[in-house]
Image 1 (tube, rainbow, N blue to C red):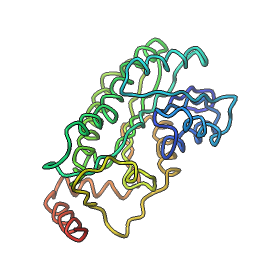
Image 2 (image 1 turned 180 degrees about the vertical axis):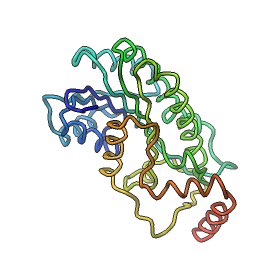
Image 3 (image 1 turned 30 degrees about the horizontal axis):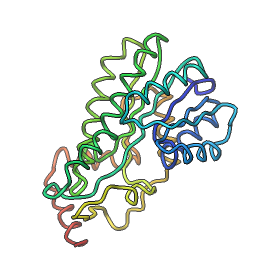
Image 4 (image 1 turned 60 degrees about the vertical axis):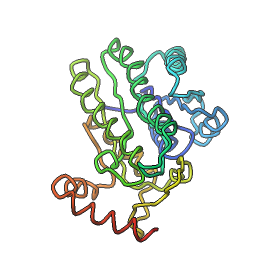
Length: 263
């Protein structure tokens, strides 16, 4: 498995993890298509990524299937194939289950989950015709451990984990690998850009700084090269996930304490 010469499409690529992944793949010789709802911001990200002879910035709202189909067509027109599709577009939503606005819930699912699913449906026929391809879904550790006051976001990531892992089994015989990447806390503007409701408690260890977007990007690249099923980054979140699976009450006790400390 190599990167040079591959055609990679990344949603939510105007900043953060998406931009870091775009730069890493482009630096390794891939042709990269950066997508974002904001045309100006994604073009600026393309400038920071460099390799402008091998990159393309397009406006795309993943909540709109027509826009997804349009960028698939434009990518095939420019580069003749799609080797890797990375579903990274998404945002947080911070509120309690008791108070969260249902229109915000639906919008979050449209972006974080349904947008990814529709993109998969748009690109799978292309990859099947090619006889190869990879779909990478940027999920979250919150897709393994439900986070209080981030429950809707967690729900979108639980759904993404399920879809990705089931699709991997369905598509292996077609030469398509589906990789699910689950970062823990990442140093981005994620919280600042989240939809905020009435109850905005944060359940997070105070001393945890989070990993860099470059570290997540490298995990994405290594998972792709090794055709893995799932990557969790940083590595020490693996035992945390296992502890929750075996002893959920222990982590729930810790989260209750953290929520109280931030009241």
